[in-house]
Length: 65
Image 1 (cartoon, helix red, strand yellow):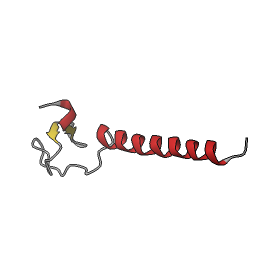
Image 2 (cartoon, one colour):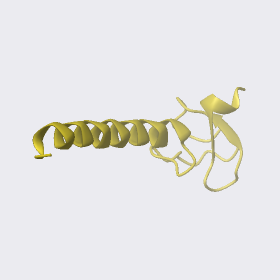
Image 3 (cartoon, helix red, strand yellow):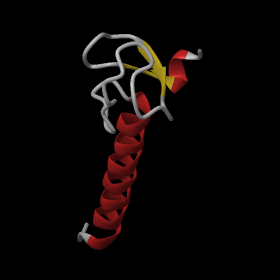
């Protein structure tokens, strides 16, 4: 299993595929948004970064010099 495509179970900490709905070790349901999910944090960071960059460009063009 690739660590990028795995998520640990919140109950037993076993590694599971991101697509799995239940843990393969203990059978408990996996969290949809796991706290250790790096891809969702990266998407959030990218959206915030683009928004801040766009805002700064608009303010540079809009504000009087």
